[in-house]
Length: 116
Image 1: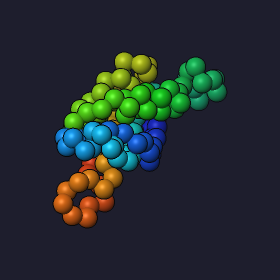
Image 2: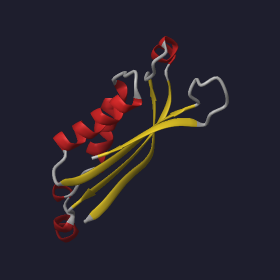
Image 3: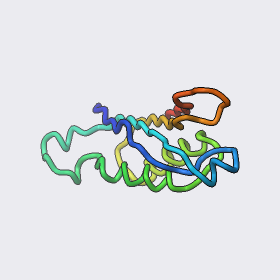
Image 4: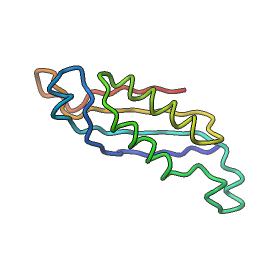
């Protein structure tokens, strides 16, 4: 079993329950962790036999562009899309963090993490 991580992917997106968040947007950080059997790619050294990091990044980017009210919805959409488009994944964990959320005080980020 192999662990593949894409960490600190930064996006500007329009997720949030408040109308201002939907209009002005905010910065988000996405961390993604996948477990997969990559034993074939170890031998062949061929990207076609491996989990392609670029494809995963493109999926996350596409899902981040679609506005949502809740980070839970964003996480679920990312997980569903990765499972639908990438083969041989055994497990996936996604964490989406909203930087400087509008909470009425200084808060570094608010995060939601989901695993399947």
